[in-house]
Length: 418
Image 1 (cartoon, one colour):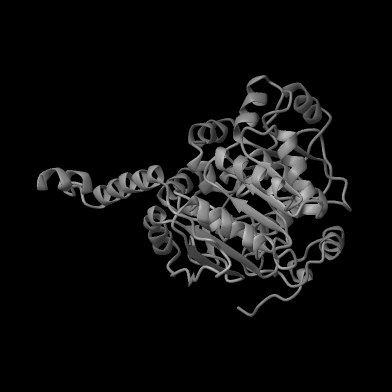
Image 2: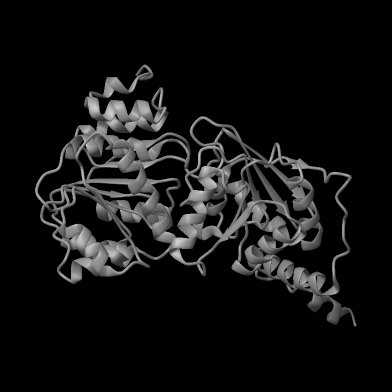
């Protein structure tokens, strides 16, 4: 099949083509070329594509084409996403694509009064974008009619599985009409997603544009081996001093505490402007911070993995993994925040000796070695504190025992020698 070089080839209507042109889309990406004709043909689809490959438009454009114009008051298509941030982003995408139509797009998610969402639905909706929990909450109150739903999309299906949404999804499948088109999109296709697809899709067309859990070719990756957390801080400061190259940066941490500490440190050093987002931050605070980041009002966003998939910003220059993620798929999603929409990006990971174990697992998952860079000479290498040394030794023992249950541990060996 020869490559499709123009969106008009898909027989989209003029309203959608004008919106696509306004958004600066030129040639369709690989996932769009493969998925749009199949979805428009009415088939069930499993789409496996890295984040940043244009998968949202791959299902959104044919969905808008099917729904076409405002009709009645009940939703005819539902898009489910795992987090508030993603739902807000998806609804924004849908409105951008539908700007020349009269389609009504409503987003519903936790953290906002149920009544406000029920009222928005009762005013009339064509496409509903929702988190699974809020969908069921409003349905059970009797405020969400479901009989007209003809299309169901699960976006970020792998994240839904990680977050334990399976019971809620099963309930949703039970209450909406069984005669519908189902679309499942995911960046990775692990066992749990496969099980979900078997429950949810009959004879689907599987469209895979890259092997699951591979890093985007537009993202160059590198890692620095550092002895301890203090040296990580020194390295971070050194890199961020280059404001021209590091002009829009996301720093990912494993915990809220580390995210807050980095944010306070950067504020003290007057490096920024900076904002921090994690699950303890109010929903509006998180969404506002992301819009500010998107608009260029802030240079650095510090985040836990809660937001790894809710950030859709095309010009992120760098992703810095201050901590190595221990949910290995999260590495793919974190670094997918850069190198989006034909832009080049760079992902830098800081690795202490205790994190080497996790990096090896990530390299196995993405099927490539991440290039190691030497620490810049200007970065001061700090002494590792006795407490951090002890914590690392304990963790390394645990890692070895996990790989080899017969391993007795360094402390055990010392005792034996005595």
